[in-house]
Each structure stands twice: as structure tokens, then as C-alpha cells.
Length: 186
Image (cartoon, rainbow, N blue to C red):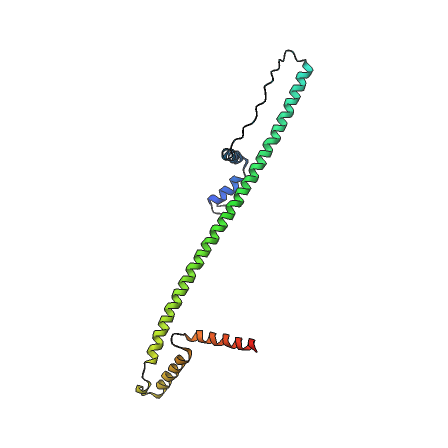
């Protein structure tokens, strides 16, 4: 693995081994255990006395036995192909399940982020309100410096215009949206 510059993980091994023929038999056995067994009607056994059968018929019986073996091999290949298809279907179901789990996890994370954002916005609004109240309670007539007095009066005027607790950046966003609404209505 180090030569190929890849890290070892169990999912990597599962992907390799799930396609290997050695494990198909175990998948088929698991499927057989899960499915209910059906009762098969038993046929009546036929007893053949090989001493009474001529040799030509015995040779035909051997050929027919060979044909049956070939059919069994085909059935085994079909069973392996079915097992492989079922294994791939299970992997598809597992992928869908993991995608659904990831989606649920992402939704929970999004909800948490939104809650955190809401709490932060509320805290910022509380802080903005307390700052606005502090600025409004300042007596501008007690300030002797003309420039500072003018700055406080302008700040108090801005707070009264936008409202207490409304941050300045939000006020500009609201003004921009109201301008857009006025333009759309014309």
C-alpha cells in the first residue's frame, strides 16, 4: 500500500473482497437462510438394474450424466451471477442509506448553525440597543468641545432616525430594499 501511495482502510478492503468469488458463496448462503424454504414435491425413485440394461443404453446414460453436469455448472454460474447482482444491489442500498444519513447529518448541522446565528444576532441586537441608549443619554450641552458636541448630536440624530437597537448596516440594507421596492412599483 505504501508503494501505491494509498492509505489502508476497511472500506477499501470491502470493495475488493466483495467482488471476489470466494465470498459469493457466503452471500448466497445468507440469502438462503433468510428466505423461507419451500416444500418441494418428492418424485418417486426409480430403481434401475444395470445388469438388465444393454451396454449401448449404459453409454447413453453416461452421456446424459455428463450433460447434467454441464447444466449444473451453468446453474452454478447463474447462482454466482445472481449473488454478484444481489451483492451489488446491497451495496446500492447501503449507499442510499449512507447518503440519507449524510443528508440528515447535514440538515442537523444546518439547524445548529442557524440557531447559533440567531443567538448571535439577538446578542448583537441587545448590545446595539444598550450602546444606543448610552449615546442617547449623553447630555450634549455638558460637552465643552464644539467638535465632540457636534459628533454626539449627529450620532443621536442617526439613532433616532434608524431606531434604537437597529444596527447601521441593517438600516442601509433596509433603505436599499425600500428604494428597490419604490423603483419596482413605478
